[in-house]
Figure: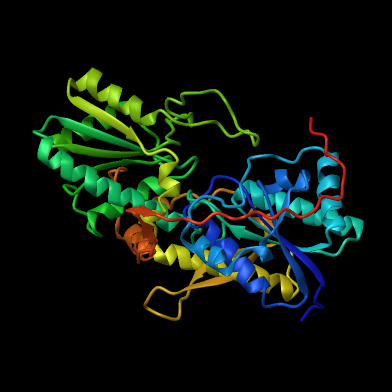
Length: 422
């Protein structure tokens, strides 16, 4: 076992939040409190952006009730960002903050780009001879991180979306008379994991007449002609047609379908959206049938009131595993979630994978899990996804509304001058 480093730990969050990302922070704090070599437990506000600004808070000063409350509180309680470190001055500043506050353990909860950031920070520390250990904690509703079986946040988002689909379809069953097409646009930049998850609303059945009737995925090139034929086929047998489409839908040439904006984020990713409206227009213009489009937007990733207990438990477990790994001497790794092959029942365990094997990669939905019709999922997907949505998180209510917690955010005194951004 490697020698323990004595010093402070820092945990931060990055990228789009989820309904369970705070559970990972709770796991980090709970585990860190059990190790004497970790003297102080800090949180970085707004990810790496807060670290650059030396905006750190003392998580050990938070009440245990608040830390426990993170288990059922959605979004990123530490704040998040989509800031990309580009300049040498920025990386030098991060390391300066780490050295000044004796940060020997760094835990970064985030997706592909965040793991790349953690890896580069750690490599710079090694070049400078500063002893520290960096462990990534997986987070993304997109479920597209390579190597890990699934990602914390995914089970909850597909549980929520499948619930929404079921509720919408009860309405459509009452209103439709073979003349209603309803389109639900969901998140998912490059992979169709989220849209595919809506198929769980069928109840683990591959019946084509059970909604959602049509699911359009980035993995299957979109064809206008096929789409219109699909809709007509469904309406010939059902009172309405329920369509789910991922925002990252692409055509045969690999171009995003109806991207409504040319804007990109700090990492160069296109700002997606508009597929639902586009599909609605195709139906109305070509088939003369009433259609409506809905877009859940950010609510789908923040719906803690309909999140998965299995997902929450695994997110908490990932946070604890990150600390255990760092204490034991591991660094430049990300915690992974794996399925035990020793049991017929679903059992989730944690593993580790080098950050460099994860950063900037994309795990696509397996083509063999998609039926030949290109718009529905087969049993292999149901077997994969169903365990991830099990159980309901107990959220406390007061006066009829959920009572989420908020960190008091006791600031750690700044010791450095202001950082200058471009």
